[in-house]
Length: 186
Image (cartoon, rainbow, N blue to C red; front, top):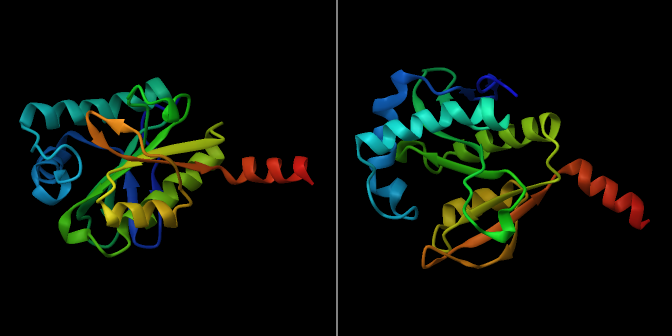
């Protein structure tokens, strides 16, 4: 297991482990109406944000994967966060696989930040994890996240209810798993 998130660089971004100093930015993200609109609609208070940061740190040594901060490589600005988790949601379609998730600051929206960051996360996962599939859930009305998921190779597999609300459950098959399936069916 990894003690913390490995550092990943993309063309515009640095993906790094969360730090205590990220609390104010994390709070701003999880209290912003645009962030929470499709994720329960309730701003997170300081305690919830603090527990979120602690959870991010704890996922790595326990699971071998977790979340990263998305940071602007040129300016150091906090642009959002995302990665892989096991949220124990009780959804059959997510059982036994990592779940991808992401959220960007409103000023980072529409700039391809989530796609660039999460592609790097998935590339890392394809090399580092034994995960033939990765799942994600998106609210049906969240067109931007549905577009990101599609660009990342996620395909809709179901629309189950979750906490009384409809969700789009999606899977992405790891490239090695796709190749193995194609070679056995040829």
